[in-house]
Image 1 (spheres, one colour):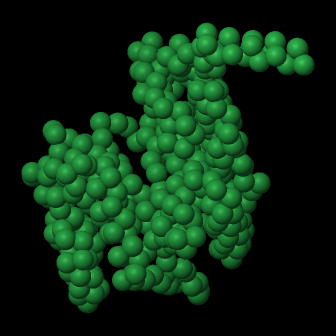
Image 2: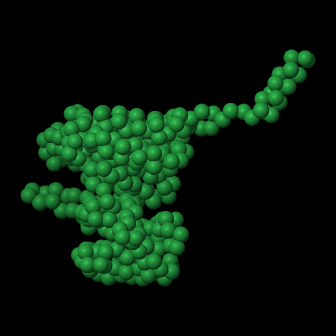
Image 3: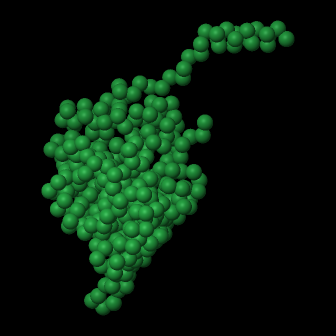
Length: 375
């Protein structure tokens, strides 16, 4: 059996602290399942925003390095997808570089949420809008240009509906689009109406502040797909996680799916927290999100059923014993937390042992040996 290929991309800040965490946890899970995953690591250490500001003398140099990081990471993703890789774990990198890549590869961020029995699927449109714009600098001025396109909007909404149908047996009940659509001269209204007719589902356009008001007043309606422009969704993601995800931002991992056809749905897993440059090299960064990302990749892409549940149980046991990093109120370092989780994991997931041959198989094998010796 060919070893599953998993890609790894590392940014500055706490990226070098978290990459070994990911490798340790992934290898422990796969080996306990009798699988040997092969990691393909990007040769470039990508910049964080803090490292760019520290190393660059002016905006021209920041622009140059931002473009280089974006071009390199885009090419890395394309090469891995072409080689058959379907999952990449990435630590935090400079958002400006990242969104250039997301625009070119038509990426969406996907987050299932639930509250009081209501299921919500948040799909963040990362492929267009303000975040994906480009800058033109003149003295004392920055002009940022952006675009929305019908083709990308259709691609994002079709994927969101398809993902909801995979997630919920009954399928989605409605699609709500949260965009500043009143700034687009009615174009988004026309695209949404055509998609609604094509997909056979109600698609409504809302101002982001209206979505906020409705969620605060009524909570989410069951089986709602929320397709959102990144200008709102990036800010609201953490709020939605806190209210409907029952989890702190620092502990969460999430997934970005590249919809460009040449990427074959390559899924990028990341921590929700940022690069945390102030913690770099201090063995203090919270590893929980990285541990969860390793488990999710192991289960979904490396043939390790039960990995996520086993890791959740191990995390809960370690946390119940007070093995927590300072951001969660504990005093443990990164390594101590990971050691504790892996120790619990080895108990939850018994080491893989190849199945013993049956008695009949052993007899047949022995008979075959006897016959071979008699020749």
